[in-house]
Length: 177
Image 1 (tube, rainbow, N blue to C red):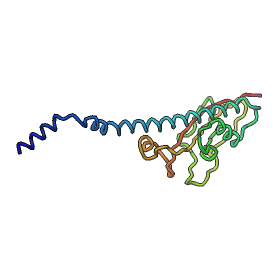
Image 2 (image 1 turned 90 degrees about the vertical axis):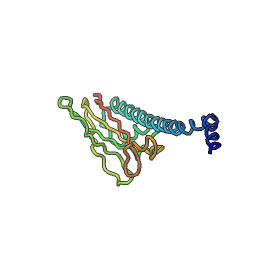
Image 3 (image 1 turned 30 degrees about the horizontal axis):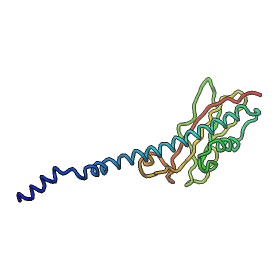
Image 4 (image 1 turned 90 degrees about the horizontal axis):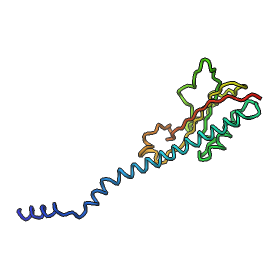
């Protein structure tokens, strides 16, 4: 019995393997933070490119010929300028309506996005503006998270197909001729 305690005492003073224990305890946490950073980086990239695409499309509409833009034209402009968004034509939903600057009311808080599980819905509201009229334009795009069930992907609100949404909104006034 005393011999067993001597072995335990010698084992207690032994320092071999301490780096392995530290690695086993710290590495999963480090890996989780790294995977969340990758997911967040791609979310930020998609959102930035959607903002850019929306801004470039609105610039074209504002400085255009003064004709009222159609839904498909604006959607095509957004998708052409938002390069990294996969299947942009099918995953992008636009909503546009005029707003009165004296009694300003924003768009509804509920956002319609495309959902592959549902049949395609008509445009929620898309009213082309007239000259010098304040217009509100909202774009919503669905995407597949890189790690849908782990790390940051599990915290995102997703639809039935596991797709998360990115929403961008802008306001503009169409320039007169």
